[in-house]
Image 1 (cartoon, one colour):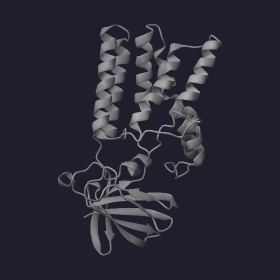
Image 2: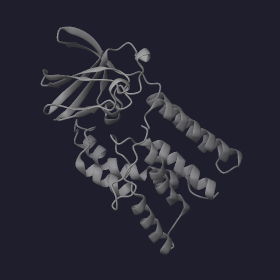
Image 3: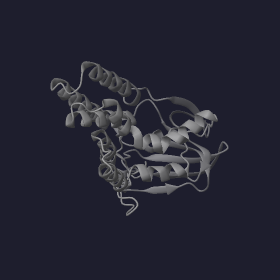
Image 4: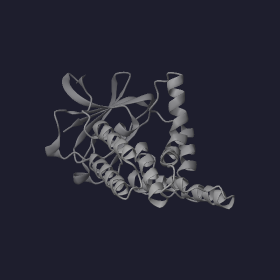
Length: 280
């Protein structure tokens, strides 16, 4: 789930339990697991002008395990309760984890909620799926409206939440995909671009053959190069894969739709810096 939604859910939960709870503390605690996991890498990338912002280093995964473990969260909250330092706003932390369990697929930071006892995780839906985003933002709006009617939150917070949801909706749901013109093996193609990790994760999944837009495929960028693996989960299109490094095609592979061939996985022949999917 996106970080702002986590903050809003945390704030609304705290105010629904205790009328005088701090909305802003709960909002921050709701975002805290992601801030502590991804924040150091993003801050360092901006400070040092690192172009590899969306290539996540291993230590982020380690931090993610700590901050997204229900076991760790409950131990810390139990200790705070014992020390009489517990506040209802802190419940936004385990709520964050519970929300992430069903909204992270295994190829995009699956939630290690039983860590360190187990690496078990749920292969959930992608929180970036537009259908889920619409459901999610509608649920937050309804939750906030109920608390407004019950006078648990004021109009300022309600309007601020609504404005935030509208901005998120415009960016994550309704924004126009970026496309480029690309020549491959003497043919011209219009390709969607995938640079951010969530764009790479979603790829062309969820698109039915009769729903494809005015594009021929997608280009994925990997900086630094890596031996990427592609699969056809939720992909209903037949795709031709081009593994590319330094502008040279290393190999071509056919990735069938999941409807025709079941779950299929293909790995690059070596480290590559681009992958192009052409819809067949």
